[in-house]
Image 1 (cartoon, rainbow, N blue to C red):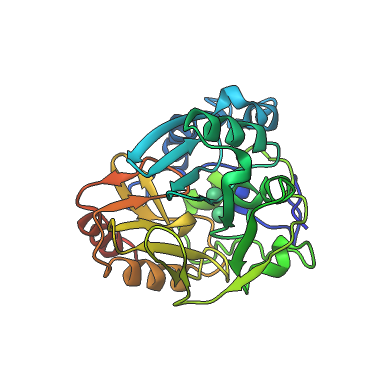
Image 2: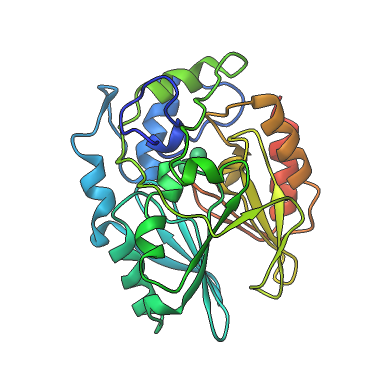
Length: 296
Ligand SMILES: [Zn+2]
Ligand SMILES: [Zn+2]
C-alpha cells in the first residue's frame, strides 16, 4: 500500500518530480532547486522543506495543462507525474494517471480533445508509484477501461503488498538528499489490474505498442515503444531534464536501471516521453544514448 509519508517498505519515489541533475553529480541544493522548476510544484526553495499542500495542487484540474506532442499524442502535464493520452480513431489509451484525485482533470483533457471518459479503453501503468498509478482506480471506475501493468508491479497496484523503497547505496549523494526533501503525495487507492504484462507484449493501440521491460526503478517498470510513430514512453526509467534525457532517480536497483536505460537507448525512436520532465521531440535515440553514456 502506498503511503503518503515515508516509512520503511512504503513505495518510494512517487512523492515528487524528478530532479534535473545532469548526471555528473550536482550538489543536492542545486538539484533540489531544479525540482520546483521541472515539477511546477516542489520544494519551498531555500528551505528544503516540503511545499505546504502539494497534494491539493496536484488534484486540481487547474493544475493540469495539456500540450500536443504529436497529432495523436498529448501530454497532460501535472505538478507530479505526467499522463500521456494516445488517440486512435475509435479509442483512447492513457499511459499513467498521475496522483490520486487527477481523474477530473484527465476527463477535462479528454473533453478538450472532443472525447469522453467512456472512450478510454485502456490505462497502461508504467509502474506502481502513486504519481503514476494514483488515479487508476478512479478511471477504472468510469467503467470502460481495462488497467494494464507489469506482472511484477501488479500486486502493488492492487494493494496486495507494498512496493520496495529506493536503494541509495550506489546512487549519488544528492539523490538521497533530494528524496528526503520531497513533499509527500496522496496514496494510490488499490486498483484492479485486468491484464498483467510482460516484456514483448504488443498492445492494440497506436498500430501496435510494444511493452519493453525496464526494471530497476521498480521491479515491474516498463516502457512503451510505438514503432509506427517512433515514440518511446519511458515512465521513470528515464527522465527529461534541461532538454536532455537522464537516468531516472530513486531506483530500487540502480545497476538494473542503468542496464534498462542502455536497452532503451538501442531503440529506433524519434520522440521520447518521460514520467517527469519535458519530452524530447526529434533525435530522441541520440538523447537516450547520451543519457546511457553518462549513467554509471
Ligand atoms: Zn514518477
Ligand atoms: Zn516512479
